[in-house]
Image (cartoon, rainbow, N blue to C red; front, side, top):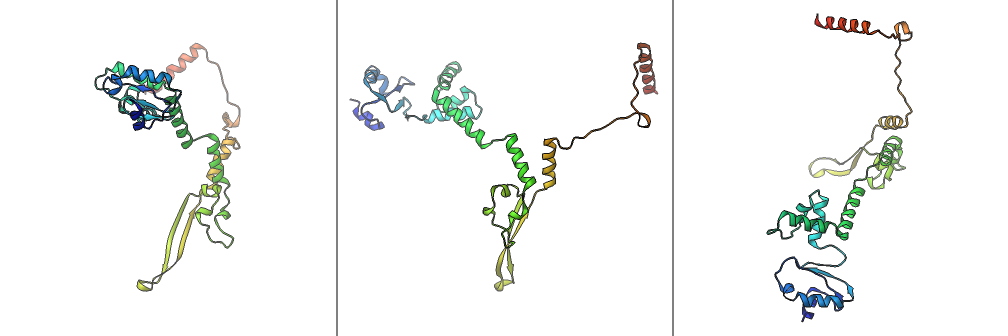
Length: 248
């Protein structure tokens, strides 16, 4: 009875099929008892079909992927569940929250979310080590590496990683001679804009604590600063004096 159905969805004989009915409509609910009997004798899991018509193997369904993407974008579980395309028209918020929470606990969902976070972190990797490395490239670059042995500027694709990272700007302009029909192409004018080495080195030196700024305070005529301890009466008299000056 089900052989044609399995063939239509691409399921090979002997594969375990798990149905996840989301509504009471359709052919699955009419023959649910027979379906579950078939599941009991199936030897292995190859594919999973949910009632929405999605087929999945080791990867997530389209709706599950949208759910994960929603969570990754900062949506709540309820919002992610709705925007994923699940039918929530006749469901209360409580029911949606329960289903969304259950879906969120799915190991494949959690694994996919961790994968997205890891990819984002690698794309936007920022660390003290990387920042110092970029400072070092700006402070220690060798300007000779921008040129070939004959003194001509190297093509930008031939620069090594450290030299290319030190490049603050790069311009290429076509050079022509003559006018009108006699105008001829001569070559290219290349301009390298180099960074301020001193500024980069100052930042590195400050990080290393090479230049510690000290400010010394002295008293009258370069002598020590005089201090004294006031009695409560003297302190109050001083306060009254300052108040009187402010009022004048």
